[in-house]
Length: 166
Image (cartoon, rainbow, N blue to C red):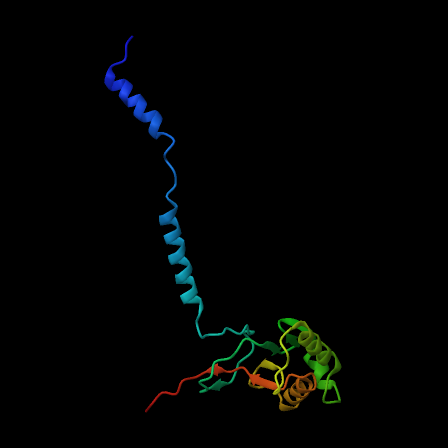
C-alpha cells in the first residue's frame, strides 16, 4: 500500500524533530540564580541564636549591641559545658578551692589551639550563658579561669528586653 504525500511528509518531520527535544538550561539557570540571591539575602540576618538550655533563665538587658559568633561556655544546673560538650560538674567547680580550675582551663586552651586566628590584644572573646541565679562565687571562678586561659573579652548572654516608653 502506498503512503500519501501527507503521511510521508509527517514521517519526515517526525524523524527530523524527534532528536531536538533538549532541556532549556537558560531558564533553569535563571531560577537557580534567583534562588541563590534569595537565600543569601535571607541568611544575612543580624540575629545570633545561642543554644541555651530551657532550665537557664538569662537576665534581661536593654543592650543594643548584637552578640558575635564566639566560643560559648554554658553553666547548667548540673554541668559546665564548652561549645555543648560537658567539661566538669557544677558541684566540682563550686567545691574547687582555687580560682583557676585546671580541667576548664585545659579545655579553653585546647579550644584556643584549634583556631587559626591570632588572639587580639584584649584577649579572645567568650560568651557565658548562665542562669540569673548563678552564685557570684561560681561566676568569679569561671571568669578567672577564662582570663587565665587567654579569654579576657568575656560577655554574659542576656535576653534582649526593649524598654517600653510611658
